[in-house]
Length: 91
Image 1 (cartoon, rainbow, N blue to C red):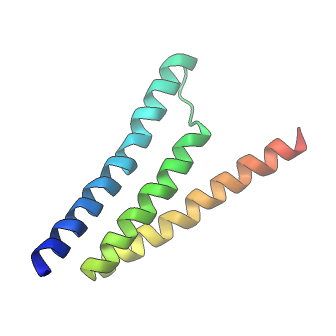
Image 2: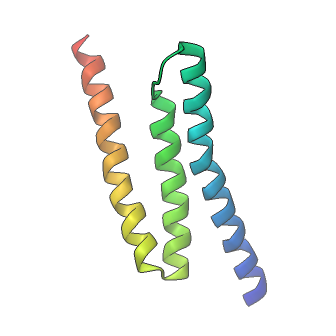
Image 3: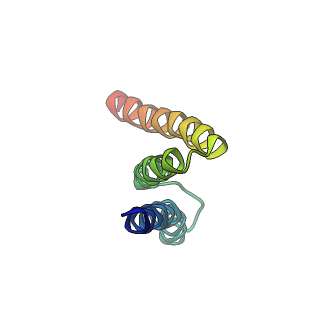
């Protein structure tokens, strides 16, 4: 049971890292389309999803450094989305 649980959590870690890394690909493609450096809203959504998955992995691994890091990142990502939605409501 322990080995399959370990394998499952390794898979969770890799999936979280893939989602987290995908946000840079999205930002790069979006910036290429716009011909300037921009960060699309989907970047922040991928950041939140990737951070939540990686935070769960860090909690499972009992890694206080990554738990703290991904917890603080989430605050920043949610704040950015709040600012985006707040700006849209004023338009």
